Image (cartoon, rainbow, N blue to C red; front, side, top):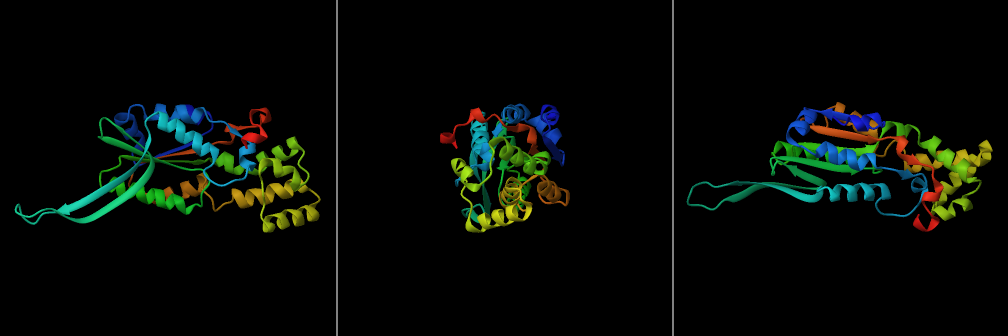
Length: 260
């Protein structure tokens, strides 16, 4: 399963019979995810561009999934009791979880719940995995899935940003203004101090930028894998996918500064 993704360098991990469930009961799930993910291309300038809100990669993934019927749902499970046939039911417990991408297969017999964690704080993994666990225990979800930065992308982030700095001839912070990169005073001081110490502005910026924006405490493959291997989310069947460094594009003509 997901052989085309594996061939392209994506990390893929299936746990608790998720692969068998998806293959047997969710015809089309693999094709949906592979179609959306194999089309991915991330301009390197999107790593640098500042601004709040959802990352453009996540937006593109959401659109692609939505076009294939993966929609946001608030899944609510209610437990009621009725002490006798003469009494009305009373709610004794309920749980509700909003999942960004849900698709039901075989009517509503098999439900695949999917979240994208491109660059959040890593406790978001705990939230997602615990949601999947609870919903699976109640029979509301058959398989839970997570998409995040893959191992090769996380490991190569500094090399990717250094290539960008070399390609664009970045030698001071003012040259990053066109990419809407606005460092805080602390970040600016850190970059300049490191540049003065090493004599290499580009590497000083890369090191500070990656540590701040894509550091170890953010959502990426190793953090996710560590959690599931120690049992977080168990026993919910899980399909985990990591986006590789091979999707990064250095075609600077593909994005204008107005688009950043």
